[in-house]
Length: 168
Image (tube, rainbow, N blue to C red):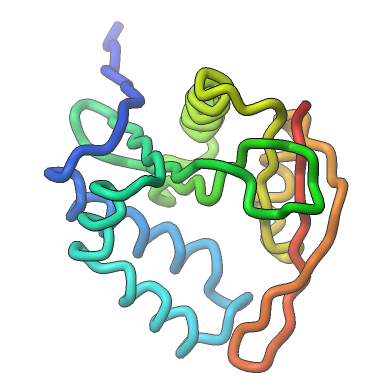
């Protein structure tokens, strides 16, 4: 029987390139057909190695998921940005490379992100996702998230509904 080494840890500056590559693959997989192509590509290109290097050195907490020493996912998290919601913590992003989805790794990364927010003193947590992103909606629903609020994002003059899932 073979055992894989799976680890979740805080991102370090040396992880910036791998996170950038993971971001590109995950976003293209998740949002192709949902967000207009030119807008999606501009968003992906903006999150370059340099952007991630600055983010890692900044105030946002970033976790990476490693499988056998290879970064396969990441999560960004911090204080809730939606003042209308009482939850104190927020997972801003949680993404895996497409080939690592559907095997429980996202749940592991989610659990570690939730634990980190709790250890920082945050009571409750929120995650926003595009309503049309069925994989994400199903993922957060399966993890016990309660769909409590709605909003919208505009992409190239196309309004797309988003949902807030909360955990107490």
